[in-house]
Length: 193
Image 1: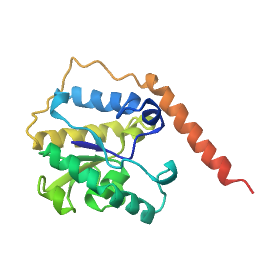
Image 2: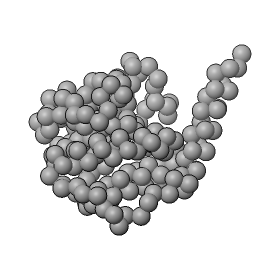
Image 3: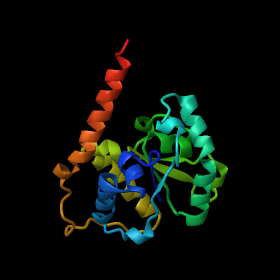
Image 4: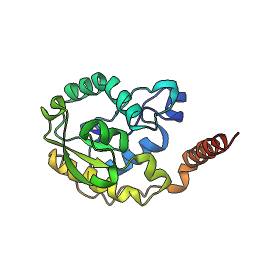
C-alpha cells in the first residue's frame, strides 16, 4: 500500500486522474521490476487537498492538512486492510509516523503512530518521494529497497524481473521542466520588493 507524498500534482490535477504520468510510470516500473502483480497493490495519496492549492511549508500548516485528511486516509486503510504500508515522501511519513524528516528513517520500518493504522500493520516502511526520484534518480534505489522489504513483509514474494525493460529517464523531461519552472517562479516571486 504505497502512500504517495502529497495530493495530486499539477499534471494529475489537470488530467483529473490519480497517479498519472511520470510518478505512476516510475512507481509501476519499480513494482514490475520486482515481479509484483499491480492488482495486489493499492496506491493512494496521503492528502486529498490543501488550502489555496499549495502544500503548507510550516510544520503546523502540514499538521493541519494531515489532520483534515485523516478520515480519508483511515477510510482507505480500512477498505484495503493492507499487510504492509510504504510511505513515500515527507508528508506521508509525517502523517503515518509523526516523524518530520524522511532522511532520519528512510528505508526502515517505523511504528505506526495512529491507532487506527496500527490495527492493520505494526509499522510502516518509509521512503523518499517518487517525485524526488524523478529529479534525483539515485533516490530510486532506496525507494526500490523500501518497497521490496515491505513487499516481502506483505507476503508478495518479490523477485527481480530481468525481463522488465529499463526505465527511460530521458522520458521524464516534462516533470523536470515543470519542477524547474515551479522552483524558479517561487524564487523570482520571493525576491520581489
